[in-house]
Image (tube, rainbow, N blue to C red; front, top):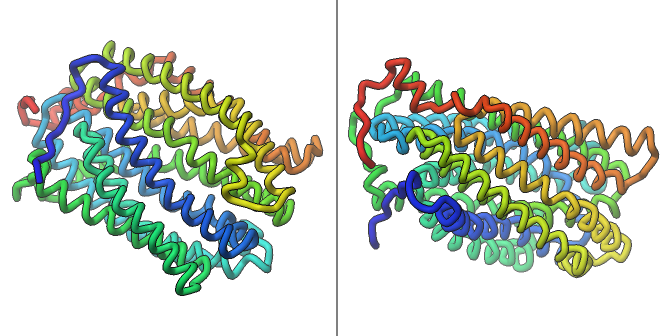
Length: 465
């Protein structure tokens, strides 16, 4: 098999580079969503709406546990991309090794906590209906217990993205996606293992994707060939990885907490609303992937260019990203207003749930433009090293999602439809907060490579990549 090489994004047409880097990321993210789509479609159609509602009740919490690891991986990617752009390859390799140690530690810790806390979280925190509780606990225990596999894949993905390679992880994710569908059918339809089988299929597929991609990358990518000196624990580098990744992890956690709160509100409206919410959330996760891919591409582009002391080029990349996200938002909004009911019917059958799910898509699609702003601006600021903004982003989402749900349901008496009004309001406010942070200019002094040189922490001379 051919070797895989890093890609320098500090020169060339900005929009073309970002788009070409985004497309493999998008394909990978869409494949990854097949995990959720396969679970939803098979569970909903084979096991029924109650089983789907039980799986949906776990979504916000499993997202909480997995995004803690994702935040740390994203932080590592910021450091690696800036060192790569600045030409500090020795420090870059040290960051790769030490970020792996950080990911392993937190991945194991979160996997254990997630499995142990499954029942009390579902019973006490989410107030899951008693008839759904056994299925929800079973699914969550297996899904959260496999968080280490998610952490490992997100880590190698972040490393390779930081070096400009968004294609290699796609190869292994594609294989894992096909395997996931096959295992779903085997466990649920043939072996009759219920929702636990759907969770196990997802974990096993994610584990295969992570392990195979790590092995292949380290064998075939010259930039990942680590010497004995590179494979040393550097406490200062580990602290840098944690310090950079924790705000992003905290932001993701706060978003997850707000989703848990919204899930609790949803559960209070009964199984029909829970089913519609689960279906609309699965569609929403799918829809967010183009924006998430664009944001991830912009983070790498920005990180390399900030590391190379090219802030003007980074700004040009942001402008290109905002234009692309706006076009995507408009196109998807039109699509869901036209055929949203057909999309919802792919997941659920009940007439009342379908009607409510279609309403959800029409409302939230009006705010897709702000959802795009969130991802694109956040990707830019993360790549620039302004990870402190991530905390502001998380706080804005918590305030809007929790506060909006309480005000609309309890004070204004809007009812269950307030769930989706709250989502739109959250995207609107958070998108505006991101734009204000960018125009404030704090990101311009956050480059990790520049700070490393000023503080005298790196004796290595810049090298060409």
